[in-house]
Image (cartoon, rainbow, N blue to C red; front, side):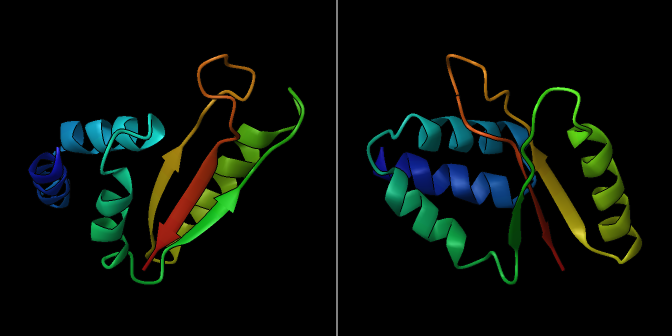
Length: 101
């Protein structure tokens, strides 16, 4: 799996969405070598930030996410959104937004 992680990271950096999907799944599943993969990615994160948005159903999380995303994009930032249903028996974690210059 070692060389496979490096290839996935390289492909992700090249813009291949499928590689990003496989990386996310591998890290989420804690597949062997996931920490090394994260180290490969971390050095290129620059000044990226993580923002967590949580709340009860109907509290306005989607509206807030939309508005925050618009602000970041208007300021010339790149935005990536990972939304996960915390009530899901598979994930059970809140969704978060990342933005970087």
